[in-house]
Image (cartoon, rainbow, N blue to C red; front, side, top):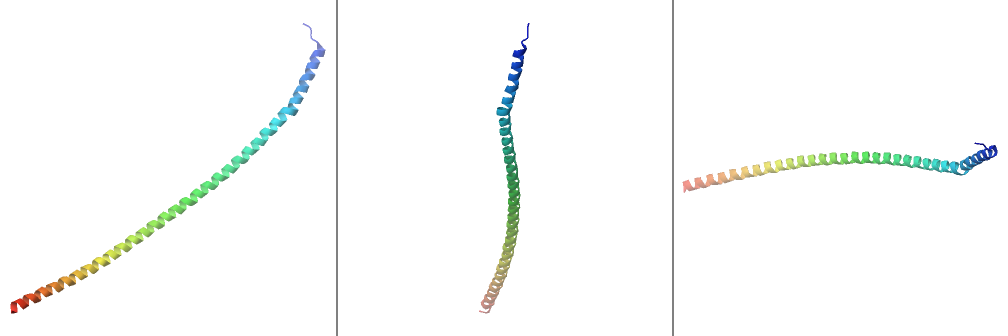
Length: 120
């Protein structure tokens, strides 16, 4: 087997030129595009993370507001129940007093009629 040194040298030069062309016109633009996309993805992820943090803060604020509304509603309900119970007690006492007065008046009337009937 015989090696042709001119063919080998020309093939080596061809490989060097091919590698230079690929590096110049393929690898650099592809790496630039990959870097640009990576930068865009990093920015999107940062925006998504900040939006998530804002949403979590809003959720916490709304939860606190809902809890405050629930506590206020419970306080109003308790106050209303206490007011209703007080009014019920007042009405019951008034009805009892009125009933006792009418009962005494009826007993007095019956007693008076008994006396009138005895004297007649």
